Length: 228
Image 1 (tube, rainbow, N blue to C red):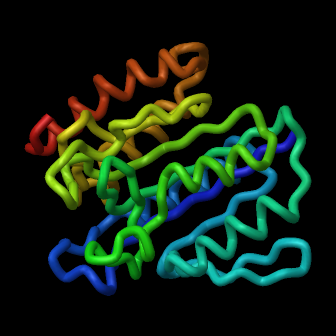
Image 2: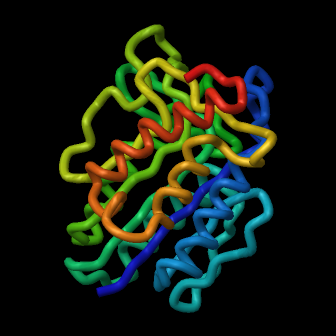
Image 3: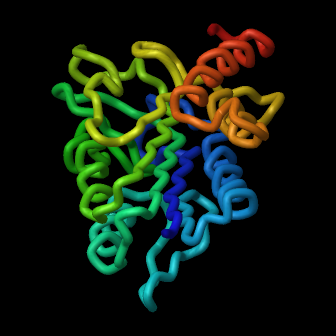
C-alpha cells in the first residue's frame, strides 16, 4: 500500500483581473505538502504552485506551475504511466478559485479565463475521472475554494455529489472561503491541518473530521472577525 498526494495552490491569476489575487493559497498547499511528507509519510507528493520546482516521474520532467496545460499534461501521463495498488490512497488538495458553468464545477488554474472556462479551467468531473482511472479505492478531495462564484447565474460550486469519493469543501454552498492574514492561511486549511494532528480518535473517521471542521472553521472565522 502506498500513499500519494497532489497539492495545488494558486495565488496569482494571470488572465482574470476581475478576481483579487489570493494571499495564502500557495502557503496552504505548501503546508499540506509538508505535513503529509513529515507526519503522514506519504510516498509521493506532487506540488503545483507559483514557486514549485519541476516534478520528475519515471524519468520524465513535468513543469509545476499550475497552468491548464501543465496540469492536464501531468494528469494524463501520470495516471497512465504509474502503477497503483487498489489499496493505495490518493489525496487531492486544491486551494484557489472555483467556479460553476452550466451546472459543472471547475477549478481555475493560474491562466484560466472566465470567458473560456471549458477550454482553460479544470473540470472537477474530469479530475475525478483521472483519479478513478488509477483503480485506487481510497480517494479524498479537499477543495479550499469559495462556493458563491458562478458564470451563468445558476447553482453553486460543489452542487453535484462526487460519487464514490470523499470530498471536503471549505465552506457551505453559496458561501465564501476566507483567508486570514494573522495566521497566513485560509481558515479551512488551518483547521484541517490542526485537526489531522489531534492524537487519538477525535478525527479518526471522515464523519468525526467533518464534524470538527464544521465547528472549528466557524470558530476561526469568528475569532478573526470574518463571517461564519
